Length: 280
Ligand code: HPA
Image 1 (cartoon, rainbow, N blue to C red):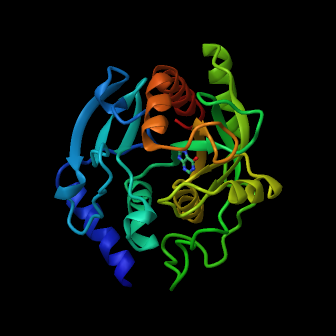
Image 2: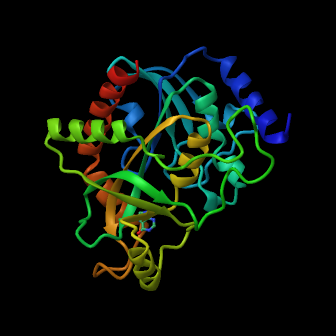
Image 3: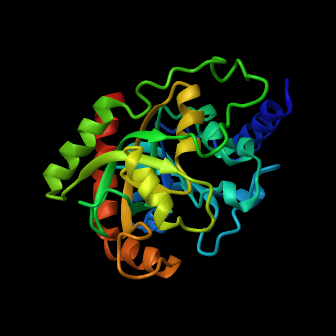
């Protein structure tokens, strides 16, 4: 057993000592959704702080709480990551995706990723939501580099439909029902932690990118390797560098995320209900 696999099974074991909860959906909370697990959308069964899981990477970003929440959203069993681990914090990519793999190992069949992102597509506006249709991963190292863990997935994983078509459709239907308008596009992960330069944003525009952020893609790559169904929604918190008037700041990102968080939560809840009916 290689060291990543060993770490993963140690984490599974440490969770299994606390709960035998079997999630269907694994939900990763981005900015604006941080307190989703504390709302009445979730009937909580159990919370496990990352710090209580042996060998688990603990996020350093202020405002990222760092715990798994096990519970039910519209009767669908979910595991929620409140606080994700970012590559820019200095962790190895294999540690950044450890939580994702762990949720897969706990039984999740679907990974639902959310994030805050900068709008690269000039038709977008702060406060918009974007369903991920595809991603560009070439600016961050692959979490699959190194000895392949055959028990997780194949050496050469297909990536032709990372974001499941049926799940994307289902998010659009959920948004229609709630009368929330929705964009769809390509998300690019850069390492951060600095925001991009205007020249980098023009580069991304030419590459066909619609939104940019510092997470999500590596998690999708790891989950795709394991054969999970994946979907994702970005909250466009700001226009990317050079496209808006003001300089970029974390305060602006947080402010927009907070402003639209009520709709973001409604959309996530409605979508999970539908995922439950589709996969359950
Ligand atoms: N760039 C990168 N990451 C982000 C941004 C951005 O403009 N907004 C929110 N996360």
